[in-house]
Image (cartoon, rainbow, N blue to C red; front, side, top):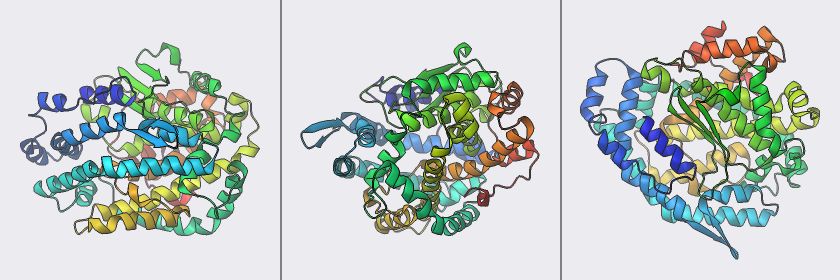
Length: 464
């Protein structure tokens, strides 16, 4: 696990051109076998069983995954007279002020992804579906439902209700912010404009790039955590041409070696992203050494994502904004609400789509249109069908995000109730968080709610 995670970090942080996972799988070939899956099935340990299944699928598709990564590094997009590295194209698009050029960058990326990446992604999808059936599950949907312990059907009922309940307030809440920050409304909005909306350069004055890491350092200090003395935590904010624009936390050896990787774009999005990944990093960095492997690495990722959102949403907390960044919070509230609504509705649509994509009777030829319809209906913009596979996170990770949003709401309420609205500046709140983090991951996020003394029910109706 450490070898794979370190390879992932080095490659996607742009420090290593090749993505050499094949030798790692070969060195540990005995770990990821059908025999291991069958043996673990008898133990009733669904977390280790899921780990073995995921490893077996990684073993069987390692060649395709390595080739996808190689191509992502090598591909250069031609946009007009310019050449843009594929992995930097989203950053360039987010910082582009001209809507037509944003559309041209996205079109170039979609076109090259469809010809160069899609065939390999389809191979991976079909191979993992076949392995799932060979292992005795009817579909990836059934496998994930059983091994995650999450009732995906019940969760979709909640997301469908969320979509219905937010339908009438969505455009009135979002359109004024689109006009304020992009100068256009839903009538002119294209999907290619959304990265620029999330980048929101109009808010740069409130979120100067040079304040992001000091703000994190100050926040952690308020919780009794000295970032500079955490030798196990490494922040990688360097700009590299082949660095992926998608920030991540790489827990290489929990808790001894944890990386926080971000690709600086500037502004509010950078601050939010840094805080989000810091939530993961501090969680994994405070795990008690010597815990079982499952508690250090596995479990329900809705749990760790709840802490990531807890930190991320400090960037919309009026008290934090005024005390830490020294900016007036009121003008930022509408924008924060608009962004959250877009993401909630987008991920609700993704969950419904992915349940159908991974169903036993799926017709793959119908999925691009299904994807486009669901995402377009949710976000109220024509969504490109070309990303119907690229936009799918493995093993229903979309469900983890959705559950984490609701879990975070309960966690934040608990901290505010126990330590006040300035909980982020209270060492006692930090002690409470460190106490929770020290136990590592949990089998299900509901365990966190039990620890907080609230009913262990993840309820999406608290979100809108």
